[in-house]
View (cartoon, rainbow, N blue to C red):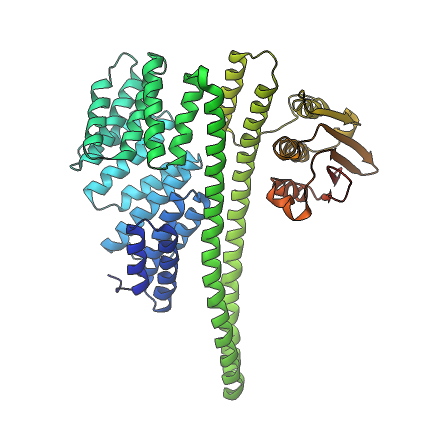
Length: 522
């Protein structure tokens, strides 16, 4: 079952080959609509799969999984070899996205489905390597070794070097006396000969990790090699991975590396958020045009129905209702995905602002304690890998947590003041609401530190009847109303809504910024 050639699909392929990704995504979207119009389900599915792979490559992992699921709905005839290979590529993409989202169990399930449908030996070799990567992260070394022994039979040198590197890593993790260096360096040599830059980065990361406890100088060398090649190919994710190592391995330059890590990490998040918005807009614009055309067609159909009689009107109503049910179902699925994305973003915000808070402490220390700083950085790094939900305020009395948060922004140039923050205010507040309050106050303080140039900051807490009121005020340069949501405060407005509260920005005061937060006790 082969889909026919399509102008939009061929155009998309040429743009993708030229690495003009945005245009490729747009034309795959147009091709998908064209295929659906002509009832070519395979062509539409392949368009969806390519769109999903592009989304994953730009960091839109939830959106990528959603697009892949739409493709799966169109791939029904599993006996067809083309459909099976398309399903394999699609499940592989969902597995990769799930792995980036740290949902490793689901990633393994998707990889198992990938291998079930794969019908090409070289593709299988790639999939064997991919599933072994996740199993290694889970500590399931024996299972990973089973797949890698199959992967290393690959004829393609890139696939072989990948399997060789991973298999040596597993052997070393199983037995610390095993010497994996000959295999590590052989894999690196193959990758250098083939000019496989991404493969070289993988080797540099592996070698840096291997030497981390054995030879700090060599570990530092390979971390710098990783940063160099990642910078060359403009891979922000590989650059952050290299800088995370350099922060620990190069104490003399830790502040330079830490600031660079923070800048690149922010750029990476901005790039991913822009990609999500851009891909969503492309699909929205096309769907909007489609709906407008459908609306015109419906108007014409209604006129014909009026001429044709009551029986045709009833038939039209039946199909309209069926279509409406489908739209409602799709909207519900999208709502679920948006909720998952919001939770993922929340986790990122906790870690990103936590990193900035640690850096603020370092900048304000009169007597620098390097070991203490490295301990805090390592804590934030581990938290960035493993955090799923941070229940602030449960380990320590919450009023103290808030006071310590605000006080942490004290410095020679900034003085912070807190009023009314006592345990009685927070006693009836739920853990979820406390979490949101903590993050909102931290976002306000981080925003102050970055932008306001304030010398005095005051935060007042007050409980009136069944409402908690928080008043933030600083004497900085202020901020105009139209810049509020461009200045890092968008999340604060979003968070207050989740606890049924309100936020007011008073930009009319003589100097500085005044923000009022209010939310119900229960």
